[in-house]
Length: 263
Image 1 (cartoon, rainbow, N blue to C red):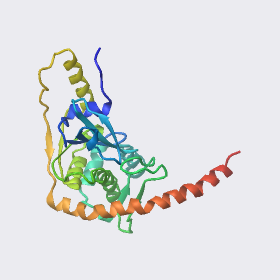
Image 2: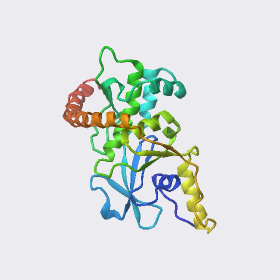
Image 3: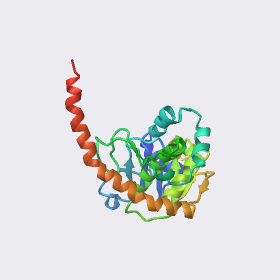
Image 4: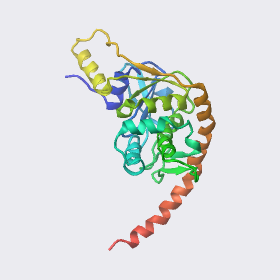
């Protein structure tokens, strides 16, 4: 019998985030960002941590409430096109910053890097000149800004390992590299949680002397795009901070209305 691991821990092992200071994001249902730390005493007090598969390491976790469901919503209600390839082409043609439109990716409330069950998603900055493509790109950028939000207080630069279904989008990976200012590392083999579990299984029966190499692709942040995102991020952060009482007021107003509708 051998011990397994949580999916987020297997993903860290599978993608290569195994050393202190390594950072990875799972672009999945929750868009979870993890930072590898040497022991729980080094974990950010504002979040939670889990034990890494590697001895002596823990992972400081920032699991968003909703990650790729934002993209699902976009395709169903704004893009009106299930073809992700065409969506990527449309957003790639838009300049970084989406014409000043922001997307707050809080479809189901939020739990990291801040807690608000009342938070909701929304666009900000729409003008008469805003295009559908700008709205579409803003959703991808909103999730990238959320990763930046989670990494506040951590050293800038370095590499960011990406895994999960969203990592199949080269356009999104470039947006994340530009937005975070980090070199994004991805792999064409995208079942990296399963890879991590397989490595653990092989170790348990002494069938693996060392971790096999993984073919990876790197996306470098483009200086001009990163400078633009760095100027816009404070607006993103201020917006969600100022919206907290608005979200609470909305929920307070809706509660008695929902009760009135009950038979």
